[in-house]
Length: 456
Image (cartoon, rainbow, N blue to C red; front, side, top):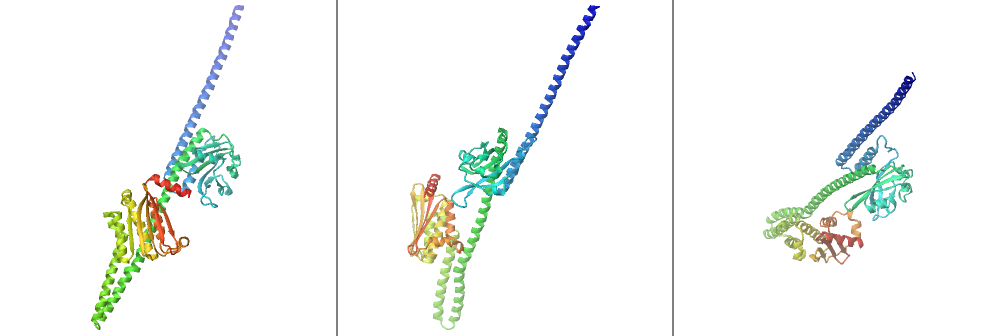
C-alpha cells in the first residue's frame, strides 16, 4: 500500500515537472514566434519605407530633370527633402532647410556673399539675411568642398543670427559645387542634435547632388534664353544700322540722281553743253553710289575673308575705305599670327577691326588709321587700331552710351569676349584713339591674362 502511494506521488511529481517544462517551452515558443512576427513586420515596414524613399528620390530626379526654372528647382528640392525624411518614426516637424547661394554684395559689388535663395522654416527677417561664409559651419563646408555636420548650430558664429536656427542643435551642410566653382550650400537643421544619422545624411547628399545638376541645367537654359534674346537684339540692331546706312548713303544719292536727271532733261532744251556737264556729274554720283552699296555688301559678308583669309580681307577693307570714302587705312600684319588663329577667330578679328575703322572714319576726322596684328608672346596676339584724329573723352562717352544711337563699342566688347580677349581703349581729346584687343591663343595664356587683370 505504501509503495503504491509512493509510486503515485512520484508519478504526480513527474507529471507536474513535465507540465512545467512543457509550459515553459510553449511560452518561449510563443514569445519567439511573436518576436519573429514583429521582426518580419519591422522588415516589411523598413522595406516599405525604403520603397517609399526610393520612389521619392526617383520623383525628385524626374521632376528636377524636367524643370528648367531656377527658382522652381530650389522649391522642389526642399519640399521633397522633407518628404524623403518623413516616416512613422521621422520627426520632421522641427526640420529647417535653406539654399544659401552666392551673389554680389549690395555694399561692395566685388564681394560675394551668401543669400537665401529659398527656405523652409525661416522667418521673413531670416530670408533677408546675408552671410560672408568665412566662419563656422558655412566656411568649413565651402573651404573643404564636402558635406559637414554640427551638433551646436545655435552657437555658430554666423548661423546663430538666424532666428529659425536658435531652437536647433543638429545641422548638416552640403556644398553646391560643380567642378571648381561653388554656387553656395544646402543647409538642414533640427532641434535633435542626433537627428542627422548616416542614413539621413546619405539621403540628403543625393538630394543635394540632384539639385546641383538641376540648377546647372536651369542656369544653362537661362543663359541660352538670354543669348537668344541677345542675338535677336543684335539682329535688330544690324537691321537698324543697315536702314540708317541706306538712308544716309545710297537712298539720298539715288534721290539726288533722280532730281539731277530731271534738271538735266529740262536743261537740254535750253543749254546742251550745260546739260552734258550735269550728266557727267550725275554719272559720277551714280558711280560713287555704286561704290557705297558695294562697300555695304562687303561689310555684311566679306567673301574675300572666306576665300583668301584674314590678311586679304583686311587689305580689301582698307582699299574699299580709300576708294569709297577717301580714308587712308594702313594694314600691318605679322603672317605668323594668322597661322595661329583659328578660322572662327579670324572672322571675329576682322569684324572688330572693321567696326573700329568704321567708327574712326565717321567720328575721328583722322588723316590715317592704322590696323596692326602682331604677337606679344608666342601664345598671345594683339589687334591694334590707332588713328590720328580728334580723340574723345572715354569716361564721358561711357556715361552717356545708353542714350546714344550707335552700339559700336558694345559690339567690339562683345566680339572680344567671343575670342576670350581683353579690350583696352585709350583716347583723349586732340590726341587720337588707340584700341587694343589682347587675344590669348591657348588656355594657359587666357589664365595668365585673366589673373593679371584681377591683380591689376
